[in-house]
Amino acid sequence: MRIINTTWFVIWLCVGLVVINTVLPFTHAIYLLVAAVWVEFALWMVISFTGLYARTYTGMARQKMHLLLHYLFRISDALPLQWYHRTFIGGLLSGANWKVTSFACLLVVIVSVLLRSERAEASV
Image (spheres, rainbow, N blue to C red):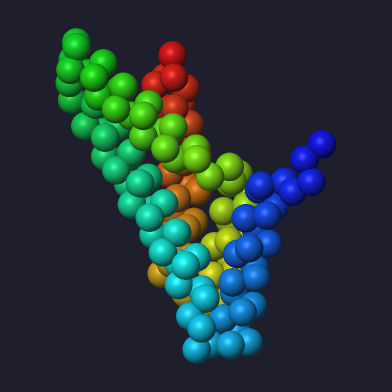
């Protein structure tokens, strides 16, 4: 039996960073969480544009783009968070007055749900 569930560990780590930043603002603890959100946002935007770009190709070039898309999906699955965890993190950042970052976090949730069919197609 696993003592620490990695998903909830990540959530409590995010809450802890926000609390530390609230209590001790000079530590800038929340910047680690903000950087992680923006890296994930950039990855999902690359996945989105790669998926759109793959639609313009035919034949072997399209298969190569789908292999690249599959590789990017595997990278995005490295952090085992569900959509509701990411939504919670977005709400947490919104409460900490990081409005644009929380919007980017929620946009990642929307894009990942919209590309679910593309993920299933890339894994086949």
